[in-house]
Image 1 (cartoon, helix red, strand yellow):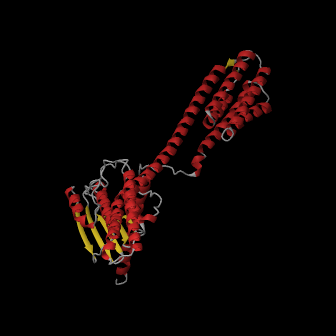
Image 2 (image 1 turned 60 degrees about the vertical axis):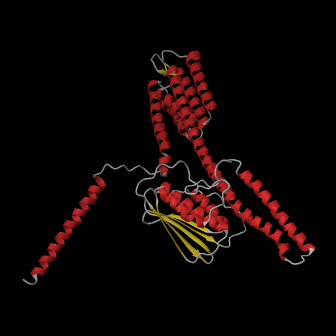
Length: 457
C-alpha cells in the first residue's frame, strides 16, 4: 500500500496536467478560429502582380472563346481561328507593358478576322465586324492604354478604332450579319473615359503628395528661419550691452592713467568709435529683423510678457515665469543643485527660454500633468531639466506644427551644448539641456539643418 499511494497520486497529477493542457489547447483553438477580427493582406510583392494575373486569365478566356466562335460560328479553319484568337489574347498581355503596340496588334487581328469571316460567310447570321471575344480583348487593350499614356494618345486610339469599325461595317459591309459596330464604339468610349478618369485621379494624387511634401519642407524651413530671427533679436540686447560697456571703458580709460600718451588716446578713441559704429549697425540689423512684425513683442510666449524693447530675461526672472505658468493652471515645482556661478548673458537667456518653451509644451500637450524644473549648476556650465508626469486627459487638437523643440535645439547648438527630449517610461516627458559656460563666439556660429522633430510631448 505504501507503493500504491504515491503512484496513485502521481497518476492523478498527470491527469490534472493533461486536463489543463487540453483546456489550454481548446482556448487557443477558440481564440484562433472562433473570431471575426479583420486581418488585412500585407502589401507583399504578389499583390502588385494581381492585376497582371487577372489580365492573363482574361486573355486565356479570350483565346479559347474567340477560337471557338471563329471556328464554329464563322466557319474558319481551326488553325486560322486559333492564330487570330492568339493575336487578340497576346495583345491583352502585351498591353501591360507596351500598350500602343498592343493596340496595333489587337486592331490588326480584328481587321484580319473581319475580312476572313466576310470571305467565308454563308447564308447564316454571324456577329460582325467584332466578335464577342474580340470586343472584350480590344476593350482591355484600350483601357490599359488609357491608364498608361497621355489623354491625347488615348483619344486618338479610340478615334481610329471607331473609324476602322465604321469602314468595315458602314463602307465595306457583309451579307446577313448581326452588326456590332455601334455597340463596340459605345463600349470603347466608356472604357476610354474610365481610363482617362482613373489616370487623371492617379496623377492628381501624385501631384498632391509631391506638393504636400514640398509644403512640409517649406514650412520647416520657414519655421527654422523664424526661430533664428527670434534668437537673433533676443541676442541683440546681449551683444549691444557688451558693445556699450566697451565704448564706455574706452572713453573712461584715459582718465584713469596719469599723463596718457597720444598713441594711447588715439587707440582708445578708435576702439570707442568702432564700438559706437557696431552699435549703430546692430540697431539697423534689429530694425530689419523686426520689420516683418514691428508691433509684435520679441518674446510673446506664455509667462513672459516682454515688451519689444524690454531687457532680455535671465534666470533671475525664472520665479516670475513659473508663477505665471502656475496661474495658467499648471502645477510646477522648482529646484536647483550645485553652487550658482556667474554665467554669460547668452547662457542665462537660453536657459530661460528653454524652460519657458518646455513649460508651454506641457500646458499645450499634457493637460493635468505635474511639471518639475530643476537647474544643476556645474563648474563647466548649466544643466536644465524640465519633466512632466503623464497627462490626465487628452490634449486639444494642435493648430499646426510647433516650434518649441526646434527653437530649443537652435539655442543649444548656438552654445555648443546638448539637448535631449524624450518620453519617460511612466508616460511623462523630459527635456534636458546642457549649456556650457564657455560657449563659442556668437559671431562665428553656424546653425545646423532644420530638425524634423515636432514638439509634442
